[in-house]
Length: 366
Image (tube, rainbow, N blue to C red; front, side, top):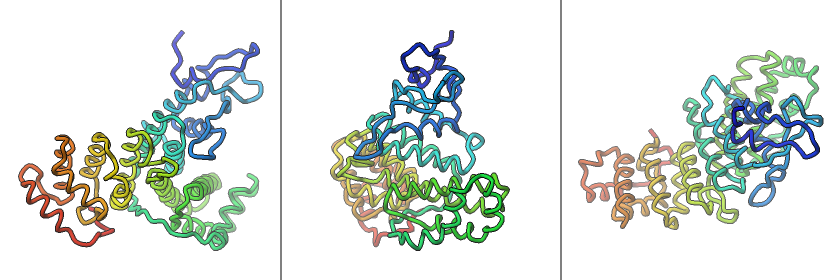
């Protein structure tokens, strides 16, 4: 008999004699990207504190469960395999709403999972999913939210999301303009709170699916898809930026996780990412972390004037780093950001041009 996959082996029956055929379970050998979203959504029993607590059981999608639940014996293996399934998802595997939802799931895992390797895979998966979306023009910002005003604008979406199935079609038909206003309101939001941003993302994706199932106007569905992608990006940035108090994002105790978080920030918005990296770069001793961030910057859409002043000085110092690999990647990164040829530009000229940069250009992207 074929050995089941790692996530399949992580699912085990409760003791008591009930037959266990784990390779028949949805969470195991029959994985698909859509099923992985549902699986990972149940990964945690508690999300409070600095790190979440893994669930002891999840929904059993197999044929032999009597109560619909199944023990989760190895949550790390379970998470890694399901994240891998999402990271490999093509545009044909997930539609826009599903991809946005998957990004939110993966980004949250990067922030809160107790396992270092799972946090890293969470950030890597969120980045891979984001790179599968055509350019959205997303720009990170953190603005206060007037919750009373927002609630009024998205009331129609909230009503749709909580309505009984028989009422949904009528709500979509009768309240199209109010739903469109709600979609616009969601797309405009840039909350500074990760839990609040995630709630808005869940609302956008759920409302979008209900509009689609109710044969709502394509323009309304498109608006909710755009709002979902924008909120997914906001969630990613909020989870990956530095949180020294909680040890999260690019302030994670693990160097590998900090690499993944930094690469995600740069993928989402390279200019805003430089402001976040500037908070921690000078205090990052690991050469591997700095090299990974330098490489990501060299391959990003940022331009030199888009690099935040707090990061410009530390990057200039890297041109004389003791580590040869760090020095080489610093030269590549600064040359790329300045649109120069690294091989044909002397280090002195590179440094001179870098130090002569003027005011920070918040729009400094290609």
